[in-house]
Every structure is written in C-alpha cells, then in structure tokens.
Image (cartoon, rainbow, N blue to C red; front, side, top):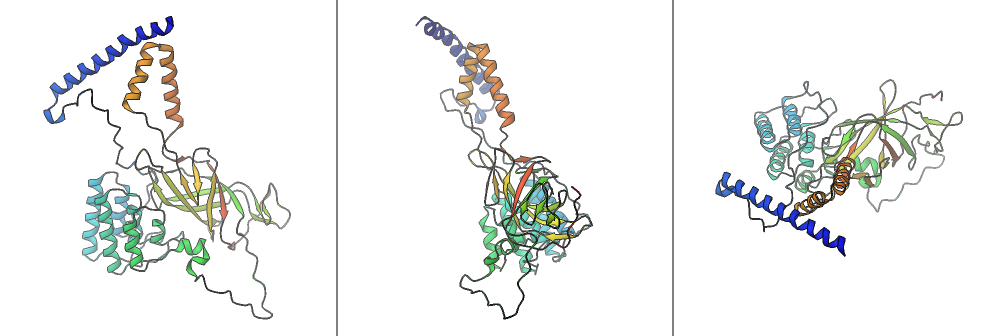
Length: 394
C-alpha cells in the first residue's frame, strides 16, 4: 500500500500544478484577447480538432498550354487548394463559356471541358464550389458539348463520377443522356438487356478466336509514379510496369515456347478515376485507379480491362476496385493532458509514451500514399486482344 500512497502524493502536486498553469494561461489569454475571442472556462469540455478543409497541393502538374483557354482555366481550378481562388477560376470559366469559347475543344488526352468540370467536382465537399461546377457543366451541355466522348482511357465524363459522393452532378449528367464507357467496358452486360438471349451461331461459322488477355487472369505490376488520396487529382495519369511474365495459362516464373503473352517490363498506363482525402477523422480516404492500356515498346497501345485486386501494403483495403485507407484514432485534449501528467510523474514512462506517439504518428499516416515501387495485382475482367506480342529473353 505504501507505493500507492506515495504515487498519490506525487500526483497531487503535479495535477495541482497543471491546473494552476492552465488557469494562469487562460487568464492571461483572456486579458489579451477581445471579449468575443476569450477562452472558455476550464470546466468546459475541450473541443476536438477541427479538420483542415483545404486541399493538399496537387502532386502532378500537366501541360495544358496547347489546349483551349476554357480547358486551361478549368484545369487550373483543379489545382487550387482554397475556396476563393477556385471560385475565381470557375467564374472566369463561366465568362469564357458565355463569350462563345471553344466548347467542343479537347486536350491531348481527348478530354473535353466537361471532363475537366467533372474532375473538379468529383472530390470537392465545398457546397459553393460544387454548385459552381454544376452550373458550368449545365452550360456546357446546353451549348452542345459531346457528353459521351471517351478519352484516351476509354472513360466518359460520367465515369469519373462513379465513385464520387456528389450525386447532384451525377443526376445532372444522367438526365441529359450521359452513359458510362467504363461500365460498358468492364461489365459487357451493363449495356445489354437482362432479358436478351444470345444469338445462335450460324452453321459452319468459325469459333471465336481466344483472347490474349483472358478474363480472370492476373497481372503483377509495379508503380512507376506515386499516387495519393489527398494529393492526386481525378484524371491524373498513372503508369506501372509488369513484373512477372503472363503466360497463356496464367502468371508463371517462366513461360514455355510460344506461350508468352505479356513480358516483364511491359508498361501499363491508366488514370486516377477518383481520389479523395478523408473528409473527417471518422471517414476513410479513398482512391480508385483505372489501368486501361498496355503500352508497347513502339508506343502502340492495346486495350486493357482490369481492376485492382490487391496492393502489397498491409494498411489499405481493396473492395471492388476501390482502395480504402485507414481510420486513424483520435486522442482528445483531456487524454493528452493525462499523458502529460504521467510524463511529469515518471520521466522514463514519459519518454516511452513520447516514443510510441512519435513512431505511431510516423507509421500510421492517415492518407493513402503509394510511392514508386509499390506492387499491385490487377485482374483482367474482360477479354481483349493484343496488337503485338513482344519477346522476352528471360
């Protein structure tokens, strides 16, 4: 019982000292601040941290200098991190649309101004910014923009809203006849009636050629560029490199003669279909990658219909092609004061707590970050043919 009594005697002055320090600090702050900014009394509950509503700086800067002024302004809006500059960019875009800007112009990736309006609206949680993007999209549609144009990744503007929580923009697009190239490509039955019956093959007709990239086969690939949930933007390009040979019977260490389909070192290109930082401390960050092209050595591309099956990372979870981050636990102000009191009583315990907090804070990063070299496993969901097959001396 004596150690417990000694611990109690140590706690009394420490807690009293903390309370006195807190009261003195609050009194001085209340004297220095105006009445409207005075600190609440010590008996009031300590509020939780207010989440930062600003966006992190974009990780990728694209060259849009050779595109139309309207696309340039909308691109710049997606790179802004604060509300006021973003709204200024969107107001400038509205003026360009009103003054008969090139509505049907496209960028080097085949994307229209509507694509870029959707990019900015897909991840925003700011009501004012969202309304401004909706007004721009409505103006573009009414003035004849090609609403179902597919870009270099076979995605329409609506595809970049499939994982977005902004249903208002989705509704606007669908009311004007927008369709999905992504769903039609990945799920062939999406554009067909469920009651449709397969047509009978004519007598003597040849059997269909077996696809090079068959459904269900997996491809191991390694990222060449970093991707983030908070710093990547919807529409950013993504590239990876195949790491294991894909044979006709699946991934193997080596293929028999004539059975090689994809050689290690083959490039796979795609785009960020959706990226959103955690909106609050109770929600998960989200990231969706769309790998849609096999890039051959001469620059020619073959279509790829695949989804991310897994990531070589123990923290994130992959569900239906969507990568979900972790929910980081949140320590309240009172818990922090309690830890400080323990540190004052026992310096050794204090150093231990501080070390654990430091390591935990460094290792448990809330947002998703996949640096170059992160291994992914892709699963082919629709068969396709390769325009060429490359040799592999390995």
